[in-house]
Image 1 (cartoon, rainbow, N blue to C red):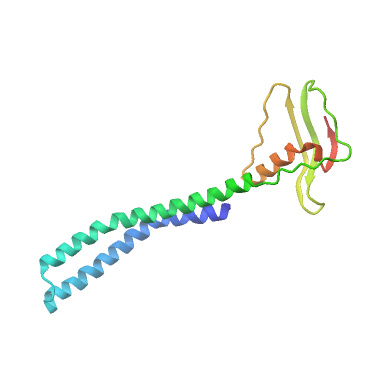
Image 2 (cartoon, rainbow, N blue to C red):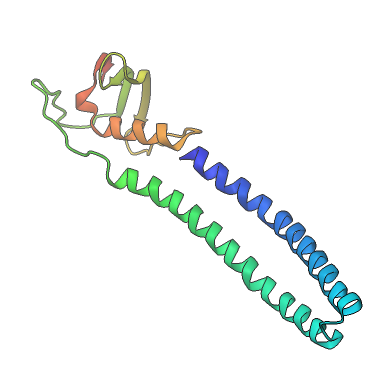
Length: 168
């Protein structure tokens, strides 16, 4: 998803300079062709050609606006895919044979060197430690949003820890 979003950003950054350049080239081609028709072949009246140029320049801003709108829709689609991935995540929690029972919270929630994985070759977290004192709020921050999502999904099912050295 990040790669798709970067491609959309690059296209948007290049859209304005490219459209300006293409607009200028198109104007030069039209001016050359129109000038040839007026001077050489005398098939177009100069005032008709000026009206045509005026209409051409009236059409350019809506075309640019349409291009920007299409870019925004593509960016929104990439965001929608990320949101849907989170909303459609599997939230089924399977009960394990011997769950750890927690009746009261005395002073803190603490994870020490725990690991989460789907199977031994597909590691999610390894040697993860976290301490949240009673009455405080914890936050997990990562550079990549996908990893943060995995961390939070794994922590929400902390009874299903795959590898545990200490758990309070």
